[in-house]
Image (cartoon, rainbow, N blue to C red; front, side, top):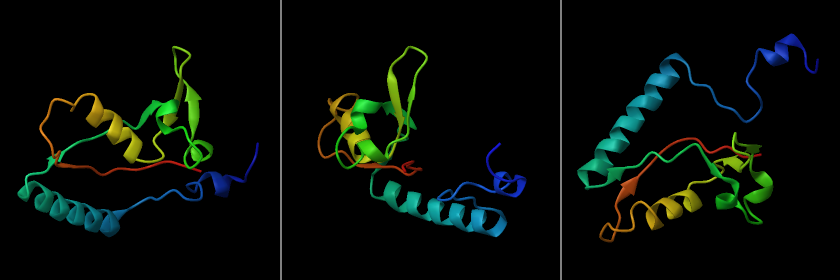
Length: 112
């Protein structure tokens, strides 16, 4: 087994964990930001945590992307970025909406 039990009881490098007052402070900030965006007429979008890997292909993101094989054999990837994913959603599910699209989002991105 790799790593000591101490290492396994900690989160991996680059991962964040918020507890107690830190978590409450983060939540308060998020609530304030959301109220500002919604006050200006923006609509929340919660993009998926993963999508087809080709959505994130390219020199900048491809090598930094965590990929895995889906149950149907397709190559999937955890989102390393929001831009290409939101562009795909805007061009697909939101294509019939009038411009400009006023969207806000938050969440984790996962990359090497």
